[in-house]
Length: 227
Ligand code: DC
Image (cartoon, rainbow, N blue to C red; front, side, top):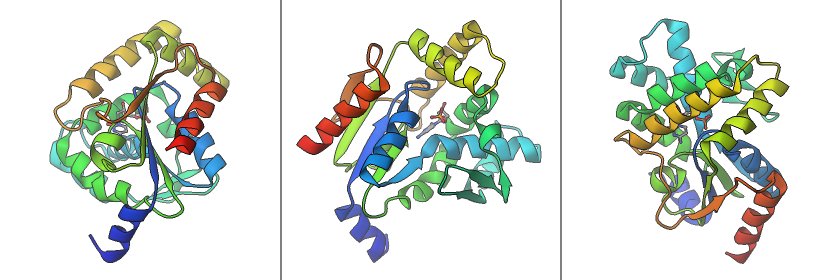
């Protein structure tokens, strides 16, 4: 680690927000980043972008070394207002589909891909602070984070939330298909050997099934202030 990274790692606060798909991590993380005026790492987007780049280049998602090469060389820019460019092309809508999420979950199970994205994720740690959203933020990428949150909700509840989100964005989806997708994705994310989805031992688990977005946000802010 160079001096600057070392200094950042020791003195810059990180809040990790981990949990399964559709639990509301992205929404809560964006609210926290805006409230605290901190940086935001959407680590899922990096896996989604890797999957998309493979599809665009005709690379099979199970050819581990080639997929890892793609992850290593990903030419991505995160623009301030949420736009994401892949090789200069706006791809936000393309990476948010269910198919892109499933492809992301497949490439994310490849250990070489996780290694290739490791430093890129740590480089998001910049002052004044970072909200890191993903599956392994508290366990692998930022194990020294000052506050670790793990959000949960039942698969049915998460499928309903995702359904609402996708319908609002104009996608044509069926709730029953989303429940199956979410269960399959949970299964793969939790059971892979490399950095599986699980709460860090020192994470605070919040079951969001019966909570509104505002309630989850307030609870995380309360924990941050108390920290
Ligand atoms: O959070 P998301 O839905 O954008 O993530 C898409 C997939 O990427 C998810 O199914 C698993 C993978 N992922 C991961 O393995 N590790 C992360 N830190 C973030 C996402």
